[in-house]
Length: 236
Image (tube, rainbow, N blue to C red):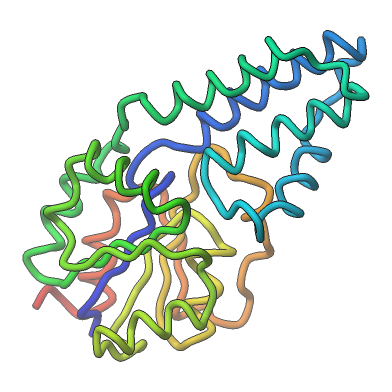
């Protein structure tokens, strides 16, 4: 019986990665103005982001620094101060913009909170994520909120122990196999994947093959309540 439901935030409850993709395309245009090449910068930027994760963590601020490093490296440091200012301005705009909640998120959370305890578990810069949560107007749906540096089995176990939750009674809902699905399955919980329209390469891993009963993929967050009701033998 599912008693507690965990929700990811970015690209599960509100749009996020599409804005990063927009900034990445703008960065590519800046770089191509110096190199004359229109080939994608994705792989180089991804490599820079991965090497910086331990220093900067997840979020727009770390992404800004990684974009600047990528621009400097790919242009042989020919990128101008004005162009670096454009990169910084893009990130400022991202941090200041409104949050657009995904269709069906409010209705789903409203329905589930009557029968389950809801926990938000999201990684990233705490100040940035807290601001997004405030702008989303979704805070009142959650009994607890956790901002974490990484989502791995130890992180999930620590949260569940603190809240005195049996992993077998916990299900995590998110858009990332790497962060929301695999680590929860590894500790004996259940997980629901709701793919977003685009996925950050860092979050791409293979689908789990050995936990079919504990794992499901749904098309929309709207499907979560009915899916859980069917799986738990009806609503409590």
